Image 1: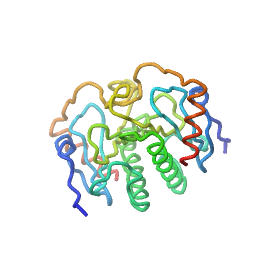
Image 2: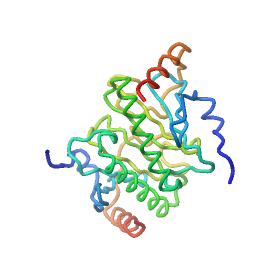
Image 3: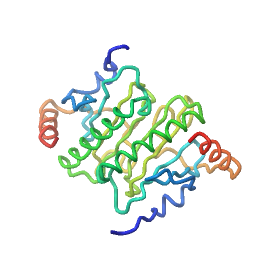
Image 4: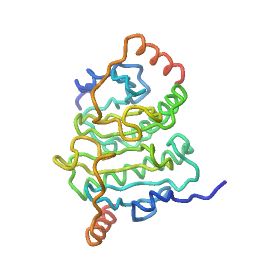
Length: 134
Length: 134
């Protein structure tokens, strides 16, 4: 079986926070929303139902743990969770904190406008707050 | 505890296929994509992490079962799964079969254009095929 290797586009767009068990937890460099991503460290998987049942349960547990922490950190009105993969096929789950009036509210974040990178200071602050809440 | 009651907008936009255990499986009337929805029959829940751990596991199981069936039925390139809830807060999970060149590919389906209802014949055919694959 091939070893897991992070897709190069996901690597370029995100920063590693920690490994939550099954997944890498990564923060998007795009700072328009509090936006993180879980990437199961399994090679060749594109759909959640391609994972083993145990891995499916782990992914759910880790997704909900991170979603809950993100809500605590941001006080957001709603957490959006999505696994699309139309562009990058390697399985990855987006977890995004949404608030009324944020860019494209109440529409989706995907495919909207162009990335606005966080400053290094904002990135470090976000990672610290998220890590403490986990 | 209040009894579960389906949100009126979800009721208006969808047709019931079956109850998968925890959830109602419903088909969107919008026929631009093969598009279904799971609605956990729990009152007052807006986020997946508000569900009990058992219900979270059930929702994952049912989501992946339906996603796999939808892939089989449609032969789609990618299944998109999303729980947004920015407009309708009652927890609901979208499961959508995507193919290259479909409306807004490879962008998201949410917030794109206007609904184009299926004919009654198409709806019945889709429900029958999906039910057989489940």
